Image (cartoon, rainbow, N blue to C red):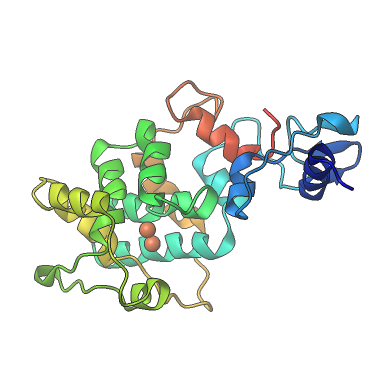
Length: 247
Ligand SMILES: [Fe+2]
Ligand SMILES: [Fe+2]
């Protein structure tokens, strides 16, 4: 009969991935995503845990730029969503700052975390952009659930499909919407929603290089590289770079 300890070891083993002589010790968060509350620490395996570069992922330059994260880390679907939304904002003649906000609005979904993505995304870029850009990205999370007839924005059909017709908004979304509605930058966050392309054309491929100038003018790229700098968000960039580090 399995003891509790054996069962825990077995579960742990199931979660561990071997990588040559290294083990990947997954964070609790990854396992929570699978509906399991466990930490795979791998200490009884006798193997060394992965620390440093992850050989399964594309190698990143020593001083990575925002563009490098687009090229080497972000998932391709959300990546095109970001690029095509920014392109639409550009076509609609919006201010470059708003084009940048559209380019980065779902950066959390593309490279980090889906839950509360507007808040995580804003936090990630906050030290490097104008305050209006990160504010707009934070607030698009709540605004997108609310129509605004004055600019022709309706509740997205995609949300009916994704969350069902009876989905109830949590209180913090309602409260943030109220806060945003009366804010001087309301329209900036609203413009993100308006240029948020759900049904993008899969035959069109936009590259991040098309936005090199906009990024250059409006994103304060640290010379030592994102993650190697010293801001309240540096650790987040490092985690995206090396997401499976054991500690
Ligand atoms: Fe979003
Ligand atoms: Fe989006």
